[in-house]
Length: 581
Image (tube, rainbow, N blue to C red; front, side, top):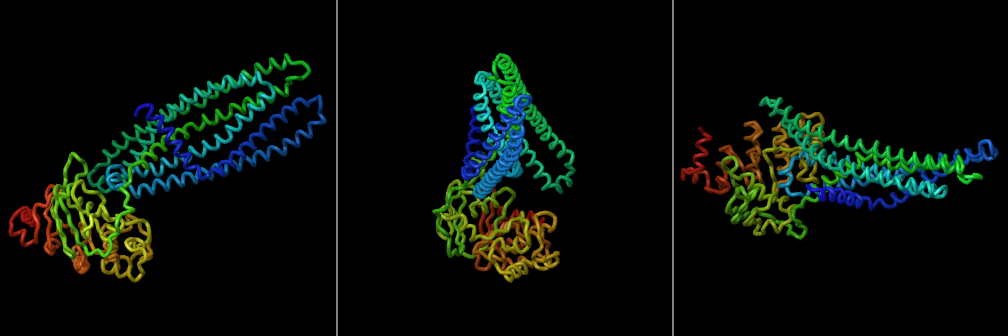
């Protein structure tokens, strides 16, 4: 990425974050007013302190009145500052909430090819870590911005009212502070953007290895995993150290400039006080001016102190908006709704590949009548699961057409198409929630009786009743349930919904043989009158199919019943003999 791209990343990220704040304008205006009130009261306190200095020995009777004013103003300034902090916190958290909501909403409409092609850990890191970084940067940035701008303007006004010549000295040195901060800020942004990317990579690596720890241990891969983790962690360490070094330069650099301002004010102010006759520029005025010089330079110093968070926030925002800018699935709001589906499916001249340079499915043709039981067999990588992805429209075909009830599925809404399919995959999934909630995922308005009947049909009722709270037991996708039990719950979901079309991708692969026989009978009853596509390796499942599709290298090379294909003595017969041998 060239320098102009990085610059546009920062500006674009900042402008887009500001758009999220539009809805918080009333709170932002009130926060500015509170900041202004707090700063002006603080500046007026400095005037009062200067007056008190001039009163010493010369006009002592005025001293009590000045002290009373200071005693009233300081708490009032503190209250306004607290209100400003409260409002900036409110603005930040509402903004981040809206940002996180938009990210998750966009994830729901991203095509599966993006999810499949990117590290899940990196995506999670953008939603969690990068949004947190934006939150921290916004929180500190807003607070310093509101108070800083008002402080700078207010102190300049007060200083000009005291002595315009000395004020010009202060203003003349200010651009040096801006120049130093700008150079270091640019260095910080580049480092923090690289750091955020490596954090995403590290999160992905950890997520992958924790989720597959059994395999890591089974193959003795612990040392290799540690080496890979160490390599990524070291890159993060080096990049993080450089980022922190760059950001650490800002504070001392701006403090040096601030010291120059203070020294300039002290020298020119002292000379003016010595030269001034009859109290034109008094010692009290010099005292005020020195305090104003400190207050004027303080915002620059404070902003430099949070430059780490600000640059980290902008770098994280660039990653967040890169995710949000990923093209969503094509809209189907004008699509037809699939109703009264009988399960008729036609696949006409379909080509598909995940990557253009690697063709997978070529010229696939298939006619499936209502209620037919279609078995799909073939070696690994032949396109069985890909065919399921195309039927469910998780991916769109490259060429050709798939029709359901004579309607091209591209003309149907995805929701109505998928709502007519029931699917059980080999890789089962349950979410954190009760057993009841997991089963009724396919039919949210199901009654308790329907849920229990579905569980009984799936032969899951007995193990559910043994759980601590039965159907109200909270489960996750971790260790509470075995793989087979999770698969039974997935089957119960389909038993509950009973859609007109079924997809079973090795649906009983994790279930013991005795339970599988019972479930197979339940499947046979359920498939009566329903079109079903079954990916299976077990001969008992294949034999009963009305039609067997034999796939090889993305093409249907043979098609027919078990008896017909065995009689042909072709590729299917070879597969069956190899399994029996």
